Image 1: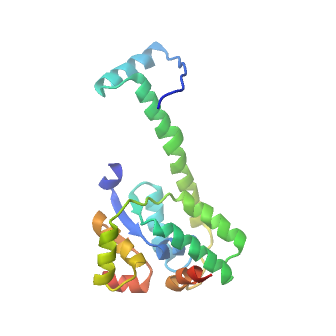
Image 2: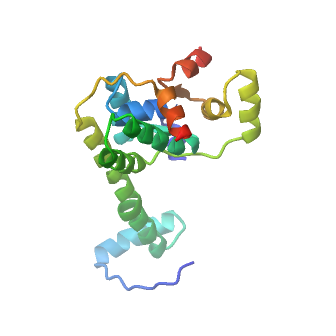
Image 3: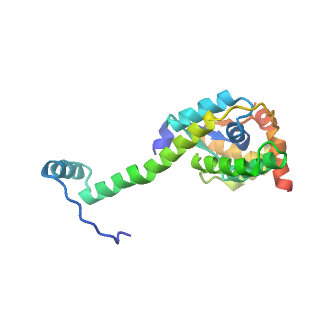
Length: 132
Length: 79
């Protein structure tokens, strides 16, 4: 498959939200997404990403960081990014959540990155600590 | 399932080239045309949507909101 021959990363909601909301280390997110745009790398995530990102947009809206119109626009842009969500192993996710003492949500990102043998890109401090 | 039929006219030169490619790939000219249509008009559109979206996001002015993403995601789950 073409995607397996390219550099790839798993991205979590914090990384995608930082890109969408133009917050934090936007230079790093911009660099990654520009390479993704130019097909120089592939991005993957568990399906959970989609729920977490729309939750994040809703929260940003509720906390007045953006308005509802902007949240809709950002959702459309996010869906256009077309980040692929491969099927992964639920059993491994449960096991990883016990071993790493994280939620099954966090474990799903870790398992996917492990199974694809790629790096996880995240701005979540807790998840970053687990990766160390 | 292939249920829709159309007639496409080719000039001799293009037809000959397609016939050679079809033979090399052990398929039909029709199959080559279907694959090309998917590549250009179906997957190509998704690709350009992605490119446009990324360009649009990158063009937005960065904000220093210093968001706590875990809080942001968890907050959305509560309400």
